[in-house]
Image (tube, rainbow, N blue to C red; front, side):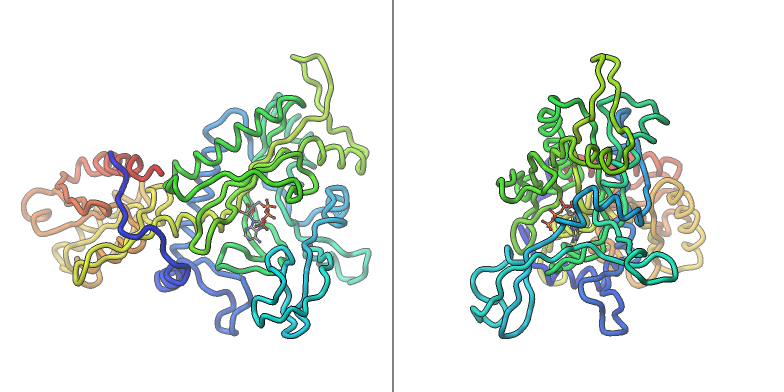
Length: 448
Ligand code: ATP
């Protein structure tokens, strides 16, 4: 199958934000109180979209592989974790303040003048630590300070021994985790691209020192292919190796998978060679042995770690932006999201031709049949044409229509394809298999 052709190559951010709000993907957080800067709530469709992004990642990383297992560690950890990892001392961004309008920026985001008022009266950069602090227990003193995790990775490192001994995995193997992280970003923005609270999908792959560079290349390639598999167009993806001065403090080499967002290229994922930096730091601070005895090599060593680290929110935004298209003219005009079926918030919509007492029970029956296997939605409001448009606009790959012929003649339904708008008639007895076939075809046309 050939890939889906597009009318619009790139859309602007306002269009995406507008659609996201109108259709219930993403809302401004605390909206009724005027909103809280750069925080967002995921509505009924957004939560399905983001859940699908996380589910397909978890399946590719954990369920489909023998060499990676999962973990869900606590957001709150001992402050020692963040002292050992270097976050307390060096997880900071250079901050500059405009002397005229007093706005603050990340120094590496701006030039010599304030982007807001053009003043060149900018302060010298000072390091601003991005850790969110809070207090544990009833007394708010220094001894009670703890941090909200700024990455999920450390929860994995400190559990390396627990996981290795309980699963008896041998090196090389990985531990994956999905969860919230928090960073007091200086300049959040661009919708859900950069926020202070976000979800990460991270995997730490423990390997033998010396094999790290090969694994690094493997995971860079894997990550890029993963985005393509789930529908991001190849032209909108690129891999960029970090310059030496961009490298995080723990990294021997990092490459970003970048996406061409409406405002330009932006990072979706970083694949870093973290060496033995983190495990050694925890060995030193905790006094616990986190080394590994390699039977095959007959030696004990502290594993090296290669880490693909990505954001669920940023990825959801990329999937949304990349799926967007507008087709046709006049009354035939439609907005359509060409989501990959595994990413689409709704996979199958069941639509009776009209709200009619003859059709509704049958349509409900079909809906109950379909929802067992597919994320389905039932809709019987307004005209069928408008309902098709609505499903197109939220990216539902298939609509199943129940009409009078269904109940009066053939016990068959119509399956309508989002991308081609082709319709086929199938007996209800074969419906599930037919939906499976059609979705498989759409998956193949969605490959970027
Ligand atoms: P950036 O350079 O954009 O600040 P980073 O290089 O600090 O990001 P990493 O520490 O590599 O980010 O985190 C891994 C992934 O987590 C990023 O690729 C991104 O997808 C996601 N992520 C990081 N910070 C944020 C944030 N503030 N909001 C949303 N997602 C984020």
